Each structure stands twice: as C-alpha cells, then as structure tokens.
Amino acid sequence: MNNNIAAPLKEIPDGLVCIADYAHFAKQHISHDIYEYIAGGGADELTLQRNRRALDEIQLLPQMLKDCTQGSTATTFMGESLRHPILLAPVAFHKLVHPLGEIATAQAASALETTMVVSTLASQKMEDIAAQLDSAKWFQLYFQQSRAFTLTLLKRAEAAGYTKLMVTVDASLHGIRNRAQRAGFKLPPDVKAVNLEDRPELPRKVLSAEQSIVFQGMMTEAPTWEDIAWLLQNSTLPIILKGLLHPQDVVKAQRMGIAGVVVSNHGGRTLDSIPSAIELLPRIRKAVGAEYPLILDGAIERGTDIYKAIALGANTVMVGRPQLYALAVAGALGVAHMLRILREELEVTMAMMGTPEIKDINTQSLYSDE
Image (cartoon, rainbow, N blue to C red; front, side, top):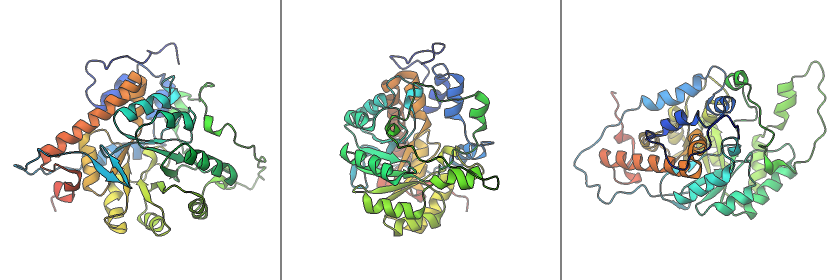
C-alpha cells in the first residue's frame, strides 16, 4: 500500500450514503495513478460517459395502491437461488486497493449472499478465494495463447467448486486508455496475476516490417468462435460469454449452446464510441426470446439502475468499479455496505413502483412518450 494514502477504515464514514460517494471517498485511499486506472475509460471516454447518461435518461412510471407487503428481491437465475439480482463483476487485481484483495471482497459477498465472479487476473489464488465464498462463485476466464494452459485454468476452477464459467471476449486488447497513461499507471511489483504464474513461456513472435503489432501480433492470441466451440466441448461448467453487444452475436451464442450472455462494453474501457449495454439490451432480448439468460453490465450505481435493466430485459446485473472503491475505503465492510445500499435501494424502488417481486418488473414500468 502507498504510505501517502489513508488505510482502509474500520467503519463507514459519515456522509457516505450512496454508491457514487464511494468513488469520492476512495480518492483518499488510492494513489492517483491507481484511481485513474480504475476510474478511466477508453480514449476520449465517450462510451464511459454514455453508459451513465443512457441509464439516467430512462424514466420510471409507478403504479399506486399495490399490495407490496410480500415483496422480495429474491430470484432464480441459471438454476441458482439469489437473494437479489446483483452480481460482483470480474475485476482484476483487488490488491491494488487493499492488502487482502479478493479475499476481503469474497468475505463481503458471502455476508450479503452475493454471487462473486472471480477474475483470471485476480491477485489472490482462485482456490483461496473460493474457500472464502459461502455464496455462489463463478470464474471468469481470459483465453490464453496456450489451449493447454487455458484448460488448466478451467480444471482448477472446476476443482475449486466454481459453478459457472464466464468467458470475456471483448478485451483481447486493452484498448487506448489515455487517462491511465497520463497518470503514469504501472502495476506495482507486489500485485500480480497469481493464477497465471505457471503459464508456460511461448516462442517470441518476430514480426517483419510489413506486419502489424496489433493484427499479426497481439490479435493472434484473441479467441474466435472456434475456440468457444472447443471450450464447450471441454467444460463441465455452463459457459457465459461476457462482452457481446451485437444481437447477431448473441443469437449465434445461443444457438451454439452458450448458457447465457453478459451484455457489456467492458465498462467503456476498451473500444470507445460504441453504444451502452442498456441501449442494446431491448434489441438483444427481442432477438433471443424471453427465456435466454442475460446479464447487464455497465454503470450500475443505483437501485433504480438495476430496476431499469430488469425492465428492459436483463435477468441480473453486475457491479464492477464500485466494489474496488468500497474495498479501498473500508475493506470487506465497505463492499458489504455497498451491496446493502444497492439491495435496499432496489427494494425501495420496487415498493414505490408497485412491483413487489422481480417477475413483476417489465417495460410497462417505464415511461415512454411514444
């Protein structure tokens, strides 16, 4: 930890009452370069800003005098009973903001009965994180250049008790992250992707002057639909693809046997100038039908955001950056508090909207001037 910043607190500070407050308080607990790396988006951050703006522009239309005394945020998703439709998104390197890293996050997830999706780039071993999780645990996979090592990660996840495999497909390149570059961000020497420590060294590519470091270099490690088909044949776990936006891609995933999809633009961190996930969600839901599992990822900061996502076709949502901000401010307590805020805000929204159960939320809950 940086000695020039405040250590994580042992209690929630006065004045921290919503998710956005955590981003503000986190600046006191995270060095500037790390904060900019976490908070920043791709290039000019047009998509990052659009993610928030698109949610803000959706309006709710409540109905009064409904009996909500038997209300609940509980739901069933992909065969698992959830206390609430909020998942912790796979986020790399939790040790950037807290010495216990993902271990503390897992403790909070268990306390609030929240599914945690553990990243390939976690700074704690996937087995150690799994041991802390009493709630549902899923593993996020980044394809490796070696199929054999990719299979090793998969088998480790299966052995550790993870129940779903979430494969990220929209971040084969980091994208152009000028904000992190300007801040001079570099991964600290004591923060590592420990689950990749046994990754075999592969022959170094030698490119000719006519070849591109992007196309003939980095993109040779990017997965294709053929790789996904191979993974389906080798996994005992249901596979979810994270990072699809085009309805045709989601339909293709559905037809080839992918168990579900995360509609996401990677938090606006990769390709800039693309739509927000919430804008594409209704079109995707229409394309795949009412029953296909869809998770919405991107800019979820309020209970009303969760409600809007469900109304437009999501079954559940994922929360990314806020878990790091909360972890930095108050460790496991902070993450648990952050999750409790979201759950209680969702409960308040459902009650005031006259929709006591998750199944009651649909497009009729939204205002349209058409």
